[in-house]
Amino acid sequence: MTVACLESLTFGLGHLVRAADLLGERLLLLTRDPAYYAHELDRLPAGALDVVVTDTFDVDGVAGLLGRDPGLRGLISSTDTWTLAGAALAGRLGLPGLEPAVLRLTRDKAAVRDRLYGAGLTRARAFESTEADREARGPLLKEVGLPLVLKDTAGTGSQNVWLVRDEGELDAALAQASGRELKGRLFAEPYFSGPVYSAETLTWDGSTRLLGVSSRLMSPEPRFREEITAFPVAFPGPLRTSLEGWLDRVLAAIGYTDRFAHVEFVLTTDGPEVVEVNPRIGGALVGEGLCRALGVNVYEAMVEAALGRRPRLMDASLPGGPAVAFVLGYPAAPGVFTGVAGLDRLADMPGTPAWYPVKRVGDPIEHLGDSRGYAGIVYAEAETAELATHRAVAAAGALRVLTDPFPEAGRAAPGG
Image (tube, rainbow, N blue to C red):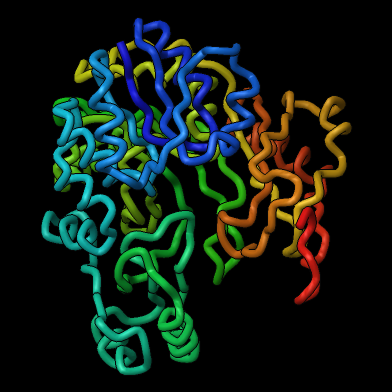
């Protein structure tokens, strides 16, 4: 029997293969580029899964390919980029899945905010403007006020997000946005001040279990670059209980009845405020961290949900494990990625630190203001998330992500 995976997050494929095996299923990875998963595939035994290279944006083509597999029983789509394609495929092939309308809603940040506002779960509506220029200035200031955030309704990885603290920054942000190709539409919302977290949840039949909360340490304003994550954050009991109830209401308000969710929120002086709701397990090393810190392979729940079964993780006692933290490794300057210096030092540092590569030597790194710019991740663990953070930061400080300047115009690129 087969469970198909429409692309995947960079890390976690090994856990997913082992989960499918345990449940008696064969994993089929559909991908445009298997090299994207080289770190995971290189660590799996030969033949551990089936890999088919195809245009994963071609819904008709993928539907035809999967339709020829008589043993197909489920489909996993765990990335923002392929969320809607996955929903369309599940519907067309009659496989278990969330209502496509719910997934479309989660991919529209402005619509989510308005839905939450209607349910009394946020203090502000989204403000959309059809003009990404100075003509939008007056209405934005009147309706939203300062500080505010301008962003893409369908953006990912902190791309196309602008913090606006004064009218000069608003003019600059609108000018930049007018020259960008957005994945959705431009909208504005208030800037909610406070520490950022992400809740890692599992929902089934409308009931939500909070698996834990990850810290999200960001770059200084005005960037929104993710830099350090730790799990699980040790909230006092009453606050954790309150957060779990709030998350249950948030997900119910948008009709999210089943599967993992990765809910980013700001903890303000007036309580939590949603940043965005992602209909998937967390990216980077969040899934890895969940497996280690909870003491279970959480990807079994992903496979069970794809098969239409209640995940055992909803009710399971969790044995627990070490707390984890990771630091995203960015170079000091844009350029062609040439490697990482200092990896040999990790063996002598506490927390069993490890480097998880994302970029390959020769890859261009152009954007350092968002998550497109990191070349890999430094992971460490300890007894608490706080101590794991200290260890991961110390390990990351021993490394240098190296780049060479881009070739001058008119000269051949490396390898060209």
